[in-house]
Image 1 (cartoon, rainbow, N blue to C red):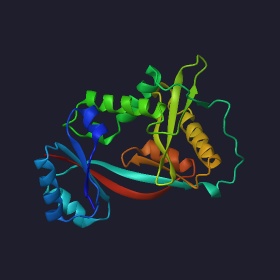
Image 2 (image 1 turned 45 degrees about the horizontal axis):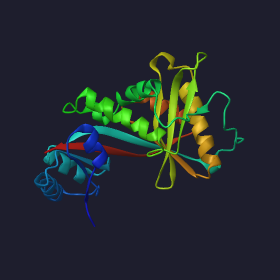
Image 3 (image 1 turned 90 degrees about the vertical axis):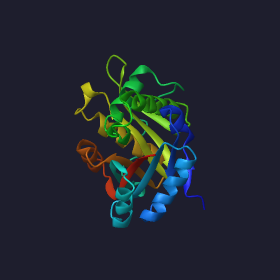
Length: 241
């Protein structure tokens, strides 16, 4: 079984050769060998995600001088236990119909990027991170990386919040969740998350998941208030070769 994968999309957007190591359980020798093989192929940046409780893998990452780019938390909600009426679509939540993200969606996507592992990595520029997230939301609108994009608009019909729903391993995945900075703290995020879980339930998903960062306490509070429970924590490392 192949243990590494070239990431074409990341490579194209970031302008460097990017790959990931698939197996989360490697010792120092195995990780070093995998990284050396990737380096020989001209790979410049490697991602590796491991269980936060795996001390052996953490030691391996440290030994190979990995940069801890993110401590991510996966939250899940079992939708069949959600005993509420199927109320989607909501009056104030719309399906974004265009296949191209407008400037308002891109602005919110950039806001989301500020707490990402890409922004945490000092070897990646702010512009690289912005471009990555702008391409991400555009791909979501084209349904390349999402099934649907939901938005909330203000009284002047400007988009002030968005959420994208994808599918990962048979689960509904809330991949991009964001609210314009000027409208945060007004319950918009909660409205979007509730709409997304209702949509997911209507489309026969049994589990809905969302991933956030350990440092993003606001997001954790939001998801917990919407009925999500923590499933796991993982460390996401970057290796520059």
